[in-house]
Image 1 (tube, rainbow, N blue to C red):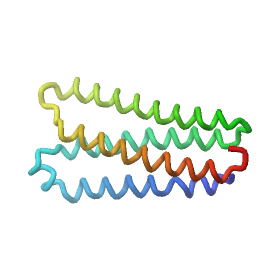
Image 2: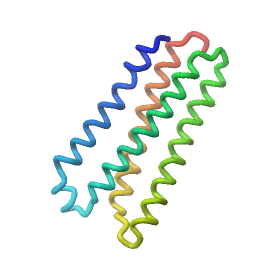
Image 3: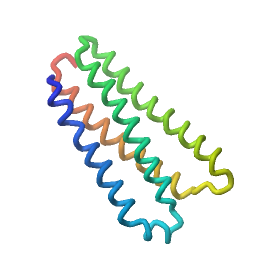
Image 4: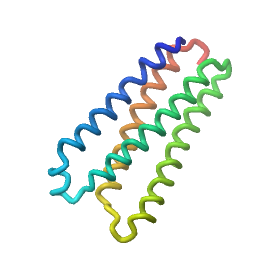
Length: 134
């Protein structure tokens, strides 16, 4: 497994980040009409992308391991750490916003979390199938 194939497989996540950010920025008025705070979505998208990048980096490091259980533990650990990062981010947002919490923005971020996690796991499954001992 080369480093080039791992970085190439990360491209769909970069593309997802760019497309969703562009969507949020160009359709700000549409989201505002539906009472969705675009700033919450953009910050949530950035947080999710950073957490996914860290998780993906940890997985790519574990690909060199001879132990297949280590790879599975890394995938589960990455998903769990991403969930914890998102929970901390939500609690920080709620404590800062107080009564002005935008529930639609939080639900939008939850959808983004599912999207990022699904795409990441599909990519990781493909990468693990390319490795012979997994």
